[in-house]
Length: 254
Image (cartoon, rainbow, N blue to C red; front, top):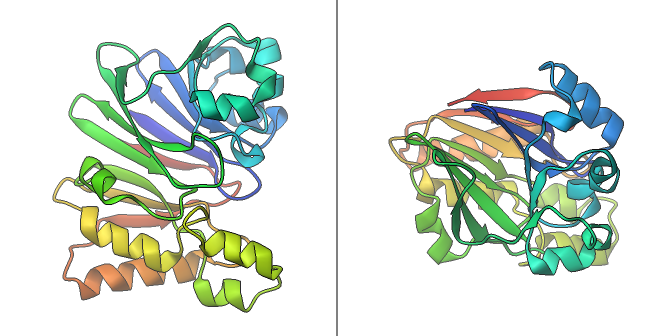
C-alpha cells in the first residue's frame, strides 16, 4: 500500500492510495489541475482513479469533485447526509453509501467511523490491507471513546493537528471563528492530537503524519514539538512523526 498525501490544509486535501490495480483517493480538495499534475508524478491520469472516499462535503475536501465527475466515473463513497451538501452528485450514477465495514475488493477492507465536525455525515476511515492498517482522521472536534478502540495500534495515522490554542486565541480570527475551531464540531488542536495519540499508539505503529495544520494558527515545528514532547513524557516509544504540508508530496509505504 503506497500512500501519498498530495495536499493537506485549509486550502484543500487529497490523499492517494495505490493498492494493486486500485487507485483510491481520500478526499479531492484543491482543484482539478492540481490533482491532475499531482497524479502525473506517478504516471497516472484522473481516469485511473477507481474509488474516492469522501470524509465530508466542505470545499477543502471536495473542491475538485464537481469537475472530476464530468470527465471520470469512479465509485464515490459518501454518506447520505454529506450528499445533501454535495448537490452536484445527485444525478451521478456511481455512488456508494456503504457504512460500517465494507470491502473494495477481496484484500482491501474499509472501516468507517463518525467524526464530530460541522458538516453533515462527516467520517474518518481505516484502510486494512494484508495485515497493514492506515487510519485517516481529520476535521473533528473530538474523538468518541468508542472510536478510540477502533483506531488503536494501527500501522500508520494521518491525524489532525490543526492549531496551537494560544496562537488561535491570540490571532486575528474573529471570535465566532475561534469558537467554531475550538468547539466539539471544530478541529483538533496540537494538544488534543497529542492526548489522543497517547491513547492509541501501539507496538504496530510505525508512522504518524500530523495533518490539516492551520496556516494561520500553527507551524510544523510547534505541532511536532507538542506531540513528541507529550509522547515522551508518557514514556511512549516514538514512531516516525512528520507533518503534512499544504502542497508538498509526502509518501508512506506500508
